[in-house]
Length: 273
Length: 183
Image 1 (cartoon, each protein chain N blue to C red):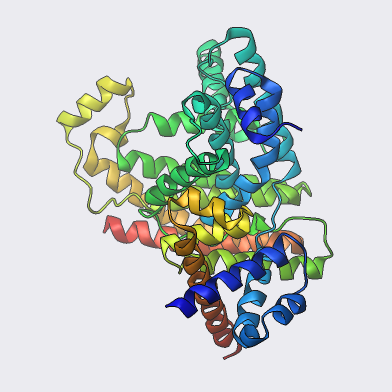
Image 2: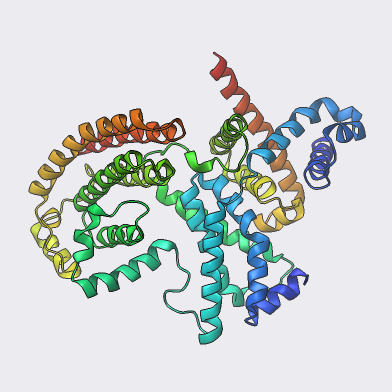
C-alpha cells in the first residue's frame, strides 16, 4: 500500500517534469533508478497520450467564436443584461434569424433550399431552416422522414462540391450527413408509442402543422418504409460514384459516410419491420 | 497580467477585457478536454462555446472557496459532456471524426498524428469514467494534479492512483489493439 503510494507520487512527479518542466525521459528515469523498469513504459505512454491530445481548435472556428464573444460582451456592456439571443450555439442564432426571414418571405426561402449549396452565403440559412423543421416535427416517424430527406440533400451537396472541385466542403458535409443518419437510426421506431389520430390532433394544435407523418401512423410508416428503402440503395450508390470522382484527400470521409449510410438504413429498416 | 482571482473579480464586475482574457487562457484547453471526451470536432466546437456562454451567464454565482476558477470552468464542461454522452447513448455509434486531423504537418506525419488521436479517443472510451476524467484533465487540459483533484472533488492521493491505473490501462488497451492489427 505504502509502496503503491510512493510509486504513484514518483510517477506523478515524472509526468510533471516531462510535460510541464520539459525534462527528458532519461532524466526522470535516472532520478529513480530503482523504479525505472516499471516507470519507463508508463512514462512513454504518458508522453504519447500528451502528444496525441495536443489538438488545436480550427483557426476559423476560434476566430468566429472570439467574434461572437465580443458581440456578447458588447451587448452586455450596453444593456447590462444578457440579451435573449446573445452568443448561443450557432444553430440557435441561425434558427432565430431564419424565423424572421421565413416570416418576412412567407417561406419562399425554404422552397429554394435545394438550389442553395455549400459556399453560398444563404447556406447557413438553409441549415437553420432544417433545424426549424426538426424542432417542430413531433413524431418519431416524422423526424425519421425529415432526417432521411436531409441526408438526401447532403448527398446531393456532396455530388455538387465534388463536381465543382470544392473538396474542402466534403468533410463538413459528410459530418452533417453522418449526424442525420445517426439521429435517424437512433429513433427506436419499433418500440415507441403509436401516434393515434387523437394525440396526433393534439400535436397538430400544438405545432400548427398539418403533417401526414404526424397524424396517420399506418400511412406514415408505410411511406417512410418506401422512402428509406429507396434511399438505402440510392445513397450508398451515389456516394460510391462521388467517391470514385473525389480526390484522395476527400475519400476517407466519403468512405465513412458510405459505411454509416449502410449501417443506419439497415438498422432503421429493421426497426420498422 | 492580472492574477486569476482579480481577473475573475473584474469579470464579475462587468469588465469585458477580463472575461476575454479568461476566455483566451482557457479556450484551447477546454476544447481539448471536450474533444477527447466526445471525439467529434463539430460537437466539441459547439460545446466549447456553450461552456463559455454558461460561464459568462453564471460567473456571478462563482465563489472562491478554496477551489480554483479553472475547476469551476471544467465542471461546466464536464456537465455538458455528461449530458451529451447520455443523449448519444441512444444513438448508434458514429465512427471517429475524420476532422480530428489538424495542423499543417506533412501528409505522412499527419496520418500518424490522426491515428494517434483516433486511437486515444477510442482507447479512453474503454476506461472507467473516473480514469477518463483524469486523463482528459491531466493531458488534454494540462492541469496539475492538485487542480485535477479539486475539479474532481477527490484527494490528490486518489487522483494519483487513478492516473497510474488509467495510464496502465491505456497502455494495455493500445498494446492489445496493436497486436490485433498485426495478427
